[in-house]
Length: 388
Image (cartoon, rainbow, N blue to C red; front, side, top):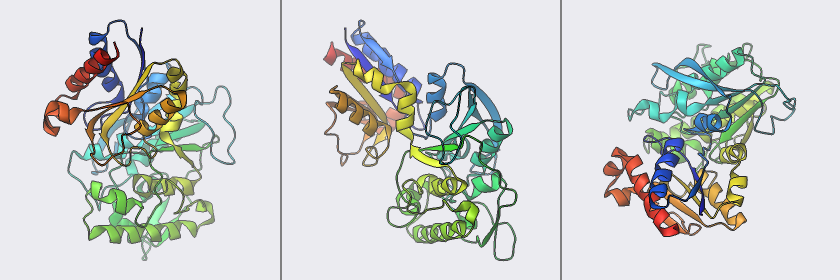
Protein backbone atom coordinates (compact mmCIF):
# COMPACT_ATOMS: atom_id res chain seq x y z
CA UNK A 1 0.00 0.00 0.00
CA UNK A 2 1.38 3.38 -1.04
CA UNK A 3 1.14 6.22 1.49
CA UNK A 4 0.89 9.64 -0.16
CA UNK A 5 0.97 13.08 1.48
CA UNK A 6 -0.91 15.72 -0.50
CA UNK A 7 0.25 19.13 0.77
CA UNK A 8 -0.99 21.69 -1.74
CA UNK A 9 -1.53 25.42 -1.38
CA UNK A 10 -4.59 27.08 -2.93
CA UNK A 11 -4.71 27.62 -6.68
CA UNK A 12 -5.37 31.33 -6.29
CA UNK A 13 -8.49 32.66 -7.94
CA UNK A 14 -9.70 29.21 -8.95
CA UNK A 15 -9.56 26.55 -6.23
CA UNK A 16 -8.89 26.42 -2.50
CA UNK A 17 -6.24 24.17 -1.01
CA UNK A 18 -8.71 21.65 0.45
CA UNK A 19 -10.58 21.37 -2.85
CA UNK A 20 -7.30 21.01 -4.77
CA UNK A 21 -6.18 18.20 -2.47
CA UNK A 22 -9.57 16.48 -2.81
CA UNK A 23 -9.45 16.63 -6.62
CA UNK A 24 -5.93 15.23 -6.78
CA UNK A 25 -6.79 12.52 -4.26
CA UNK A 26 -9.85 11.46 -6.28
CA UNK A 27 -7.77 10.90 -9.38
CA UNK A 28 -5.08 9.02 -7.47
CA UNK A 29 -7.64 6.66 -5.90
CA UNK A 30 -9.10 6.00 -9.33
CA UNK A 31 -5.73 4.71 -10.49
CA UNK A 32 -4.80 3.00 -7.20
CA UNK A 33 -7.78 2.22 -4.92
CA UNK A 34 -5.45 0.85 -2.23
CA UNK A 35 -3.56 4.13 -1.78
CA UNK A 36 -3.53 5.74 1.68
CA UNK A 37 -3.97 9.50 1.26
CA UNK A 38 -2.76 11.84 4.01
CA UNK A 39 -4.45 15.15 3.15
CA UNK A 40 -2.60 18.20 4.43
CA UNK A 41 -4.06 21.36 2.82
CA UNK A 42 -1.48 24.10 3.23
CA UNK A 43 -1.20 27.89 3.22
CA UNK A 44 1.56 30.44 3.67
CA UNK A 45 -0.32 33.41 5.12
CA UNK A 46 -2.18 34.24 1.92
CA UNK A 47 -5.44 33.00 0.49
CA UNK A 48 -6.56 29.80 2.22
CA UNK A 49 -4.91 30.44 5.57
CA UNK A 50 -8.24 30.41 7.41
CA UNK A 51 -9.20 27.16 5.69
CA UNK A 52 -5.91 25.52 6.68
CA UNK A 53 -6.43 26.46 10.34
CA UNK A 54 -10.09 25.41 10.23
CA UNK A 55 -9.18 21.99 8.80
CA UNK A 56 -6.61 21.41 11.55
CA UNK A 57 -8.63 22.65 14.56
CA UNK A 58 -11.93 20.81 14.83
CA UNK A 59 -13.68 23.29 17.14
CA UNK A 60 -12.59 26.45 15.31
CA UNK A 61 -15.41 28.98 14.90
CA UNK A 62 -15.83 31.15 11.81
CA UNK A 63 -16.96 34.61 12.88
CA UNK A 64 -18.61 36.70 10.12
CA UNK A 65 -17.58 40.33 9.73
CA UNK A 66 -18.48 43.07 7.24
CA UNK A 67 -15.52 45.23 6.23
CA UNK A 68 -14.56 47.81 3.63
CA UNK A 69 -12.86 46.03 0.78
CA UNK A 70 -9.90 47.30 -1.26
CA UNK A 71 -12.37 48.76 -3.77
CA UNK A 72 -14.15 50.80 -1.09
CA UNK A 73 -17.28 48.62 -1.04
CA UNK A 74 -18.52 46.37 1.76
CA UNK A 75 -17.15 42.84 1.78
CA UNK A 76 -18.69 39.96 3.71
CA UNK A 77 -15.70 38.20 5.24
CA UNK A 78 -14.90 36.19 8.37
CA UNK A 79 -12.16 35.56 10.87
CA UNK A 80 -11.47 32.40 12.84
CA UNK A 81 -11.74 31.95 16.59
CA UNK A 82 -9.57 29.14 17.95
CA UNK A 83 -9.92 27.82 21.48
CA UNK A 84 -6.16 27.61 22.11
CA UNK A 85 -2.83 28.80 20.75
CA UNK A 86 -1.41 26.33 18.20
CA UNK A 87 1.24 28.61 16.71
CA UNK A 88 4.29 29.92 18.56
CA UNK A 89 6.12 31.98 19.64
CA UNK A 90 4.14 35.13 20.47
CA UNK A 91 5.45 38.64 19.98
CA UNK A 92 8.56 39.64 21.96
CA UNK A 93 7.65 40.74 25.46
CA UNK A 94 4.15 39.28 25.27
CA UNK A 95 2.74 36.84 27.77
CA UNK A 96 3.13 33.22 26.64
CA UNK A 97 -0.37 31.89 25.84
CA UNK A 98 -1.63 29.28 28.23
CA UNK A 99 -4.40 26.71 28.29
CA UNK A 100 -7.82 28.19 27.62
CA UNK A 101 -6.61 31.31 25.87
CA UNK A 102 -8.49 32.17 22.70
CA UNK A 103 -6.75 32.96 19.44
CA UNK A 104 -8.12 35.00 16.57
CA UNK A 105 -6.92 34.25 13.04
CA UNK A 106 -7.39 37.01 10.46
CA UNK A 107 -6.59 36.67 6.76
CA UNK A 108 -5.77 39.77 4.72
CA UNK A 109 -6.68 37.99 1.48
CA UNK A 110 -10.30 37.66 2.64
CA UNK A 111 -10.64 41.31 3.62
CA UNK A 112 -8.19 43.36 1.55
CA UNK A 113 -7.00 40.83 -1.02
CA UNK A 114 -6.32 41.29 -4.71
CA UNK A 115 -8.85 38.65 -5.74
CA UNK A 116 -11.61 40.85 -4.31
CA UNK A 117 -10.93 43.38 -7.08
CA UNK A 118 -11.87 40.91 -9.81
CA UNK A 119 -9.22 42.23 -12.17
CA UNK A 120 -10.15 45.90 -11.64
CA UNK A 121 -6.82 46.84 -10.07
CA UNK A 122 -6.55 50.05 -8.05
CA UNK A 123 -2.79 50.54 -7.60
CA UNK A 124 -3.03 54.03 -6.12
CA UNK A 125 -6.25 53.72 -4.12
CA UNK A 126 -6.62 50.15 -2.80
CA UNK A 127 -5.97 49.95 0.93
CA UNK A 128 -5.86 47.67 3.97
CA UNK A 129 -8.71 49.24 5.96
CA UNK A 130 -10.82 46.08 5.80
CA UNK A 131 -7.99 43.99 7.18
CA UNK A 132 -7.68 46.38 10.12
CA UNK A 133 -11.44 46.28 10.68
CA UNK A 134 -11.35 42.47 10.92
CA UNK A 135 -8.47 42.67 13.40
CA UNK A 136 -10.48 45.20 15.43
CA UNK A 137 -13.48 42.85 15.39
CA UNK A 138 -11.34 40.05 16.80
CA UNK A 139 -10.01 42.38 19.50
CA UNK A 140 -13.60 43.40 20.33
CA UNK A 141 -14.42 39.72 20.81
CA UNK A 142 -11.73 39.61 23.50
CA UNK A 143 -9.17 37.30 21.91
CA UNK A 144 -6.03 36.74 23.94
CA UNK A 145 -3.81 36.50 20.90
CA UNK A 146 -3.87 37.17 17.16
CA UNK A 147 -2.42 35.25 14.23
CA UNK A 148 -2.68 37.18 10.97
CA UNK A 149 -1.85 36.09 7.43
CA UNK A 150 -0.85 38.86 5.04
CA UNK A 151 -0.39 37.30 1.61
CA UNK A 152 -2.36 38.11 -1.57
CA UNK A 153 -2.80 41.83 -0.88
CA UNK A 154 -4.34 44.29 -3.31
CA UNK A 155 -2.57 47.45 -2.17
CA UNK A 156 0.74 49.17 -1.53
CA UNK A 157 -0.39 51.44 1.28
CA UNK A 158 2.30 50.50 3.81
CA UNK A 159 -0.40 49.19 6.15
CA UNK A 160 -1.65 52.73 6.74
CA UNK A 161 -5.25 51.67 6.17
CA UNK A 162 -4.91 48.89 8.73
CA UNK A 163 -3.51 51.30 11.32
CA UNK A 164 -6.36 53.78 10.78
CA UNK A 165 -8.89 50.98 11.31
CA UNK A 166 -7.11 50.24 14.58
CA UNK A 167 -7.52 53.84 15.73
CA UNK A 168 -4.50 55.72 14.40
CA UNK A 169 -4.88 58.87 12.31
CA UNK A 170 -2.58 59.52 9.35
CA UNK A 171 -2.49 63.25 8.63
CA UNK A 172 -1.17 65.50 5.87
CA UNK A 173 0.83 68.70 6.38
CA UNK A 174 -2.36 70.64 7.08
CA UNK A 175 -3.48 68.17 9.76
CA UNK A 176 -6.23 66.58 7.65
CA UNK A 177 -6.63 62.80 7.15
CA UNK A 178 -4.89 61.58 4.01
CA UNK A 179 -6.76 59.70 1.26
CA UNK A 180 -6.62 55.90 1.28
CA UNK A 181 -4.02 53.83 -0.51
CA UNK A 182 -0.60 54.68 -1.90
CA UNK A 183 -2.01 58.02 -3.00
CA UNK A 184 -2.50 59.07 0.61
CA UNK A 185 0.82 57.62 1.67
CA UNK A 186 2.60 60.22 -0.45
CA UNK A 187 0.89 62.95 1.61
CA UNK A 188 1.48 61.52 5.08
CA UNK A 189 3.22 64.06 7.32
CA UNK A 190 2.25 63.17 10.90
CA UNK A 191 0.40 60.62 13.02
CA UNK A 192 -2.08 60.79 15.87
CA UNK A 193 -1.67 57.60 17.88
CA UNK A 194 -3.87 58.55 20.82
CA UNK A 195 -6.60 56.15 19.66
CA UNK A 196 -4.39 53.31 18.44
CA UNK A 197 -5.45 50.05 20.05
CA UNK A 198 -2.90 48.03 22.00
CA UNK A 199 -1.92 44.50 21.06
CA UNK A 200 -3.81 41.68 22.79
CA UNK A 201 -2.02 40.30 25.89
CA UNK A 202 -0.59 37.29 24.01
CA UNK A 203 0.72 39.44 21.17
CA UNK A 204 0.35 39.18 17.40
CA UNK A 205 2.07 36.66 15.14
CA UNK A 206 2.23 37.57 11.45
CA UNK A 207 2.36 34.79 8.86
CA UNK A 208 4.03 36.04 5.70
CA UNK A 209 5.01 34.29 2.50
CA UNK A 210 7.82 36.65 1.48
CA UNK A 211 11.02 38.02 3.01
CA UNK A 212 11.29 41.21 0.97
CA UNK A 213 12.31 44.46 2.64
CA UNK A 214 10.18 47.58 2.39
CA UNK A 215 11.84 49.68 -0.31
CA UNK A 216 14.48 49.58 -3.02
CA UNK A 217 14.96 47.08 -5.86
CA UNK A 218 13.82 44.19 -3.64
CA UNK A 219 11.03 46.17 -1.98
CA UNK A 220 7.25 46.10 -2.08
CA UNK A 221 6.75 48.55 -4.96
CA UNK A 222 9.49 47.22 -7.24
CA UNK A 223 8.76 43.50 -6.81
CA UNK A 224 5.02 43.34 -6.25
CA UNK A 225 3.73 46.72 -7.45
CA UNK A 226 3.42 45.69 -11.10
CA UNK A 227 1.18 42.75 -10.08
CA UNK A 228 -1.11 45.29 -8.42
CA UNK A 229 -1.21 47.63 -11.41
CA UNK A 230 1.70 50.00 -10.81
CA UNK A 231 3.31 51.10 -14.07
CA UNK A 232 7.03 51.72 -14.62
CA UNK A 233 6.63 55.43 -13.84
CA UNK A 234 4.59 54.68 -10.69
CA UNK A 235 7.03 52.30 -9.01
CA UNK A 236 9.71 54.87 -8.02
CA UNK A 237 7.03 57.25 -6.71
CA UNK A 238 5.46 54.61 -4.48
CA UNK A 239 8.87 53.30 -3.45
CA UNK A 240 9.88 56.77 -2.26
CA UNK A 241 6.56 57.13 -0.42
CA UNK A 242 7.15 53.85 1.40
CA UNK A 243 10.63 54.93 2.47
CA UNK A 244 9.26 58.21 3.85
CA UNK A 245 6.46 56.28 5.56
CA UNK A 246 9.03 54.18 7.41
CA UNK A 247 10.82 57.32 8.55
CA UNK A 248 7.54 58.76 9.77
CA UNK A 249 6.61 55.65 11.75
CA UNK A 250 10.01 55.45 13.40
CA UNK A 251 9.69 59.06 14.57
CA UNK A 252 7.15 57.83 17.16
CA UNK A 253 8.57 55.78 20.07
CA UNK A 254 5.41 53.66 20.21
CA UNK A 255 6.15 52.46 16.66
CA UNK A 256 9.88 51.89 17.06
CA UNK A 257 9.62 48.43 15.50
CA UNK A 258 9.24 49.97 12.05
CA UNK A 259 12.45 48.64 10.51
CA UNK A 260 12.31 48.95 6.70
CA UNK A 261 15.12 46.39 6.36
CA UNK A 262 13.30 43.73 8.36
CA UNK A 263 12.70 40.61 6.25
CA UNK A 264 8.99 40.68 5.47
CA UNK A 265 8.60 44.44 5.98
CA UNK A 266 7.64 44.69 2.31
CA UNK A 267 5.01 41.96 2.53
CA UNK A 268 1.47 42.96 1.56
CA UNK A 269 2.57 46.28 0.14
CA UNK A 270 4.38 47.27 3.32
CA UNK A 271 1.74 46.00 5.76
CA UNK A 272 4.47 43.85 7.28
CA UNK A 273 6.24 47.05 8.31
CA UNK A 274 3.12 48.52 9.93
CA UNK A 275 2.45 45.32 11.86
CA UNK A 276 6.04 45.19 13.09
CA UNK A 277 5.73 48.84 14.12
CA UNK A 278 2.58 47.96 16.09
CA UNK A 279 4.63 45.31 17.92
CA UNK A 280 3.85 42.11 16.02
CA UNK A 281 6.32 39.31 15.25
CA UNK A 282 6.79 38.36 11.59
CA UNK A 283 7.25 34.64 10.86
CA UNK A 284 7.36 32.43 7.75
CA UNK A 285 3.71 31.57 7.22
CA UNK A 286 4.11 28.16 5.62
CA UNK A 287 6.35 27.02 8.48
CA UNK A 288 3.75 27.70 11.16
CA UNK A 289 0.91 26.19 9.13
CA UNK A 290 3.07 23.09 8.55
CA UNK A 291 3.53 22.75 12.29
CA UNK A 292 -0.19 23.14 12.88
CA UNK A 293 -1.28 20.49 10.38
CA UNK A 294 1.43 18.00 11.40
CA UNK A 295 3.21 18.02 8.04
CA UNK A 296 6.51 16.58 9.28
CA UNK A 297 4.78 13.68 11.03
CA UNK A 298 2.80 12.87 7.89
CA UNK A 299 5.90 13.00 5.65
CA UNK A 300 7.82 10.72 8.01
CA UNK A 301 5.36 7.89 7.29
CA UNK A 302 4.93 8.58 3.56
CA UNK A 303 6.27 6.97 0.40
CA UNK A 304 5.52 9.96 -1.81
CA UNK A 305 4.75 13.65 -1.22
CA UNK A 306 2.94 15.94 -3.65
CA UNK A 307 2.86 19.73 -3.31
CA UNK A 308 1.72 22.54 -5.56
CA UNK A 309 0.12 25.92 -6.09
CA UNK A 310 -1.46 27.98 -8.83
CA UNK A 311 1.73 29.43 -10.29
CA UNK A 312 5.19 28.03 -9.53
CA UNK A 313 7.93 30.57 -10.23
CA UNK A 314 11.18 31.92 -8.87
CA UNK A 315 9.49 33.17 -5.68
CA UNK A 316 8.01 29.76 -4.83
CA UNK A 317 11.18 28.56 -3.12
CA UNK A 318 11.37 31.66 -0.88
CA UNK A 319 8.92 31.02 1.95
CA UNK A 320 6.05 29.63 -0.12
CA UNK A 321 4.43 26.24 0.30
CA UNK A 322 6.08 24.19 -2.50
CA UNK A 323 9.59 25.18 -1.45
CA UNK A 324 8.93 24.38 2.20
CA UNK A 325 7.27 21.02 1.47
CA UNK A 326 10.07 20.04 -0.91
CA UNK A 327 12.69 20.86 1.74
CA UNK A 328 10.85 18.89 4.44
CA UNK A 329 10.46 15.88 2.11
CA UNK A 330 14.14 16.00 1.16
CA UNK A 331 15.14 16.02 4.83
CA UNK A 332 13.03 12.91 5.37
CA UNK A 333 14.37 11.21 2.25
CA UNK A 334 10.93 11.04 0.62
CA UNK A 335 10.49 11.85 -3.10
CA UNK A 336 8.28 14.84 -3.84
CA UNK A 337 6.30 15.78 -6.95
CA UNK A 338 5.02 19.21 -8.01
CA UNK A 339 1.59 19.90 -9.49
CA UNK A 340 0.96 23.53 -10.43
CA UNK A 341 -1.43 25.47 -12.57
CA UNK A 342 1.52 26.98 -14.37
CA UNK A 343 5.25 26.32 -14.05
CA UNK A 344 7.59 29.12 -15.05
CA UNK A 345 10.16 27.69 -17.50
CA UNK A 346 12.87 29.65 -15.68
CA UNK A 347 11.96 28.23 -12.25
CA UNK A 348 14.27 25.68 -10.61
CA UNK A 349 12.38 22.37 -10.35
CA UNK A 350 15.43 20.21 -9.70
CA UNK A 351 14.21 19.24 -6.23
CA UNK A 352 11.12 17.50 -7.62
CA UNK A 353 11.03 13.91 -8.83
CA UNK A 354 8.16 14.78 -11.19
CA UNK A 355 6.33 17.91 -12.28
CA UNK A 356 2.87 18.43 -13.77
CA UNK A 357 1.68 21.72 -15.29
CA UNK A 358 -2.12 21.92 -15.55
CA UNK A 359 -1.77 24.57 -18.23
CA UNK A 360 0.23 22.20 -20.42
CA UNK A 361 -2.08 19.29 -19.67
CA UNK A 362 -5.20 21.31 -20.49
CA UNK A 363 -3.73 22.85 -23.63
CA UNK A 364 -3.71 26.42 -22.35
CA UNK A 365 -4.16 28.68 -19.34
CA UNK A 366 -7.78 29.51 -20.14
CA UNK A 367 -8.72 25.84 -20.37
CA UNK A 368 -6.88 25.04 -17.14
CA UNK A 369 -8.53 27.87 -15.20
CA UNK A 370 -11.98 26.95 -16.52
CA UNK A 371 -11.97 23.59 -14.71
CA UNK A 372 -8.91 23.15 -12.46
CA UNK A 373 -10.52 20.34 -10.47
CA UNK A 374 -10.79 18.22 -13.64
CA UNK A 375 -7.14 18.66 -14.51
CA UNK A 376 -6.02 18.04 -10.94
CA UNK A 377 -8.06 14.84 -10.97
CA UNK A 378 -6.31 13.76 -14.17
CA UNK A 379 -2.91 14.69 -12.75
CA UNK A 380 -3.63 12.60 -9.66
CA UNK A 381 -4.72 9.67 -11.81
CA UNK A 382 -1.49 9.77 -13.81
CA UNK A 383 0.68 10.06 -10.70
CA UNK A 384 -1.24 7.18 -9.16
CA UNK A 385 -0.55 4.99 -12.17
CA UNK A 386 3.16 5.75 -11.89
CA UNK A 387 3.30 4.82 -8.21
CA UNK A 388 0.97 1.81 -8.29
